[in-house]
Image (cartoon, rainbow, N blue to C red; front, side):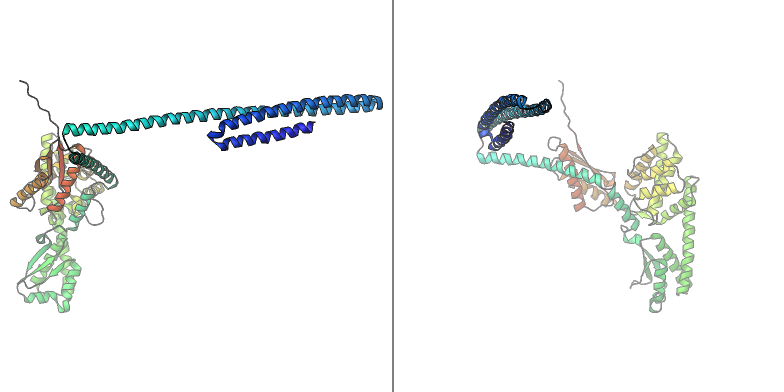
Length: 530
């Protein structure tokens, strides 16, 4: 009977598991039937287990009494004790089996409760989904109805046909697209600024200046007069050895053409060109022209130029009353005599900036000597050799710091083009003085007619855009300020407008340096009290 009970339980558990499996696979449609069937199987299993247990207990007791009576008649005392011991062991095994059956029954009860809970949860979810579906469907129908009503109302109010309404809609979409495009341009511009190096355009401009590629012909060619055309042949030499030797030693190209009684020396480096000019004049005056003589004359001319550079730097220092300047910086100042920027002599420009800086400092009650010193040294980077990298402001600050200038002077040099943050008012003074010296009419090689024409061209280009109210070209055409109608141009569109004006100026005009485009949008409300 015990074995029968165990077999019944073993059959019952797979049946319940199989019922649960069928319940999970059948889905929502078979969930209720599977639950009822599982409950029925569990109840039947419980009844069968209980009946089997009771039958087993009764049979075991009857068998035990029969065996006990028979045993008492046929066996001795020792055998009775042994039988009692075996009976007690069997009884313990039955108790263990009963406990296992009770535990399995509890497990089945828990499974039944889980199945019921899952069923309730699925029914709740299904109910919620059905409610949401009905709500969405109702809202969709209501939205379609409202759109139709609005379209009919708009057409009645505006008295527009379908085509006219479509055109108006396209116009509104175009305005919205322009707004989104302006936003996108602004985003791209900000990303480009974050990724690009600061003042990249300024760096490129100064590299071009240092290479002297922007110089005009009269600043890259020196003309040397000769007594007769016969001297041209002596300068060329047999098979061109003299002219090759001269060009190799000086780094200057000698141009000999049909122009009578003159030759040209071409080079972007003004110092090398000056050395070549002095050397050529000495050779022509002496009359002895051969490779060894050329080498001696070129070396002498170089020493002469070095002396001129040193003397020029010292004269500038004495003229401005500046003391304590390193000899290396004095040499850089002397080199400025042979350097030009946009046709403006760099030494004269630096002296002018120094004087303007001192006057500004005097008006503001600041140290005149510091301002004058910073103004004089602000363009040191333009005469540096190719061993330095970066913008001329950065290079000049590096040179000044290398040769013992103070932190205020170094910062004023580095910040005069707003590449770094200024730490003192002297940086702003140098920046203002540099702008005044470079932008005032007549400072650089440009006629007043060309100057006025350039200003008018810039104003005309900016005025051609829609929404522009007024345009002012300032700082000798290095900046234009554009006033726009606030009702026609939004803030984002103002940024896009500045970008478009700058690109138009790049395509349609020619100008030195950079032109800053500033778009000003201001909303003003005026009311008169009577």
